[in-house]
Image 1 (spheres, rainbow, N blue to C red):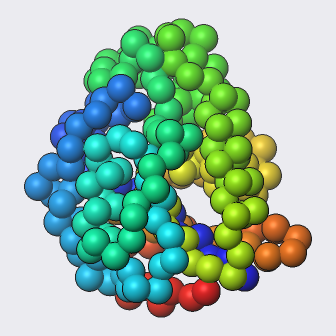
Image 2 (image 1 turned 30 degrees about the vertical axis):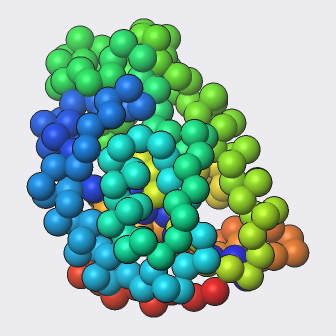
Length: 208
């Protein structure tokens, strides 16, 4: 069985202030974010991981480096970047909700139609690149443990599409430095969600 651990990056200043934190908002982790990832690192046995993949964005790279402790060559893959929110990237979420209430769902996340009102990437395009990465991943790795470090909306989309959930609104966003675990059957490639949004100080008993 293949075990895949998905980690959302630690907090950035845009996470803290409630601004849109997409692929064009390439900020580092803030002090809280570093502490979140360090706490996760202390609960996470990186020696049981066979490969580490990360988004090229700074916040994901920093998170991966802290977690990895220099044990692996971190493989950067552009397909793991966060949603490109276009001209809304970095904008205050509350201002957008007041002006465009029709593009927000009940939990305050963007609906599929958000990209009709800005230059942002569609959910369909986001899903296509993430699932292209996923299919490559499960083909390349068998009976291993793999760590993926990327982003909030991107991880929601990946979970939605792996599990065949009709509406991304049914998948809540992980906390910063939260962890998802999938087990994938090596033959059928069917994925099983073992847990979602676990955070330190939980102890993560990694399996292959």
